[in-house]
Length: 309
Image (cartoon, rainbow, N blue to C red; front, side, top):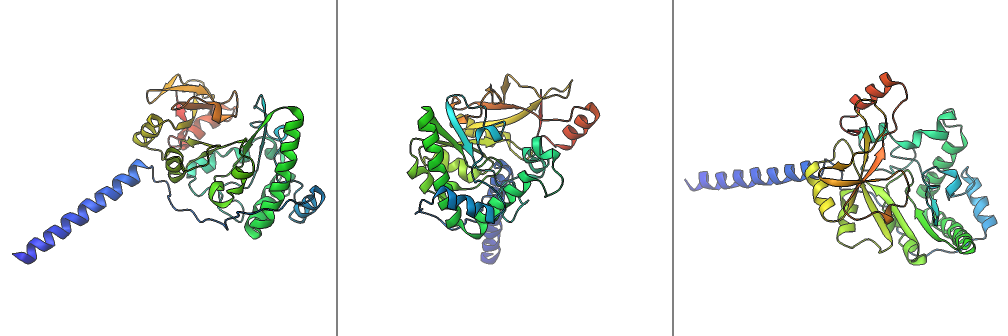
């Protein structure tokens, strides 16, 4: 009888434990919590801009910084000099820069739209530059940091000359843990507004817990695996969620008035996410093919990544 009771208790414990694990996995939308960090860089040295450019050229690109006039999103930043770093997305390069990306997220990635569509294979300037930056980050994080620091100082001087503050989006196309790998960024430029989108539940939790630097703002990105219970929870806690919407009738990008009971703001007007009210849905007009048959196929294949209105 005692053996039976012991086995019964063990079975109950295993069953409950599995249920808790399954619930967490479901609520968090099957998003990975693990992340392989690169070497943590705490100290950086300023290089001359000439030596920084030469080091960049060794890896096949001209500059680590993506300027406002080189990216349509960064350009929508009135009152700020908005700059970024454009690495390769997901597993395109030598690093997995988007460890929490989903299949439909990768399929709809903006990294493969716009100017890059006119390039052929990996021979284009934009593609080579993203690959080169990623290779530098993977091979020599310290050199990457020294170049980045030197070029960020240059951007800071430009902003002061123009009488504006700097907005910095280190993850234009990626989703890395900059505050853990390169904490010096937030210490060296405390007046800057650093921001980004993420699919990392861990990073969102750090944001809500106040663990992230005070000048680091995070917006959670919707995906086909995002769970509405989890999304409502973080919205109620003040975290914003970006969602791509489309019109079910015309199959063109549009905006909803509300989503899951929360107000929707126009995220296409400006890229400065840190200026958004807290606890709102950042509506983005879905980028779908102009041909309706292709748009319909893209929507059906998105498995809920694009949200119909």
